Image 1 (cartoon, rainbow, N blue to C red):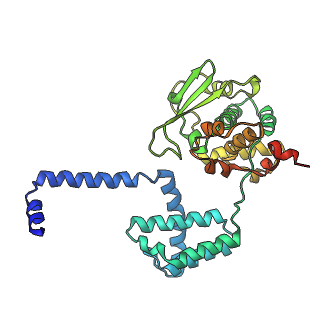
Image 2: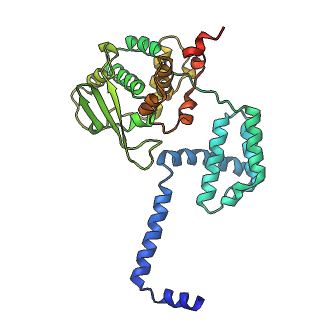
Image 3: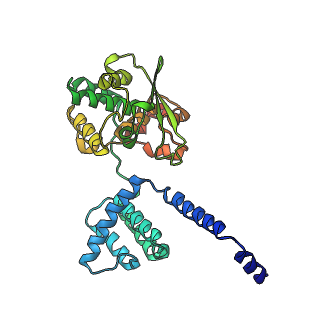
Length: 311
């Protein structure tokens, strides 16, 4: 049998072998594309931090011994890093090892035990940033100036809230992805965090009765006749700063809010006003209730019939 297989392999033409190699290389490219560029940048940031720490202790990093990885994660916990940052660092170290062919180093039981211990010490309940509520947004919009900054901030806040958009989705928005209809604005998201295959999805944003609070009219006022190109010309960190500056203008603590507060605000406000789960998911793009429930905030603890109690 082995002789027959060997004969069959030697009879393959060089052209066929070349095409096979191309297919293998293409398959590797597709596998690599599963990790988005933003994720790679984040992983690189925390990988570099790990490598800088390892230099001080003269420790190898690739591959890194399990005791080195455990020591670093434990050091991060002792230095006050958040659980989410430590988990991200763990993922970054694991990703670099996997890419270099050292996956087995991350499968050591001592590393898993350390991560479980850190989670127990720091608590499983992550401290979430506050959701931006509708009443707060109304107060903010009324305080925004009529300057270029004010028009852009108003458009970002209202569109971001009404569309339940992620920061990155706002950053990548192009005018060509917009379709203005009698009912409102239809936005095409070519790709998002939950749509890595790039199938795309549409998000509808209706006109608001109050012209001052209408996201569609705020967007048109900001665009001022522009009909092409990137909409906001801004990065994710700048969007976060706009939100923090906005909430501070009405007396709220800026550190309690983040770039995700608009999206969380839509879900929180929607639930408070009785929107059904499938309606929320249609706007947020979530594919399961479990992911949507990650947006649960303290403000929702007394929403709906639960707020009335049973006594």
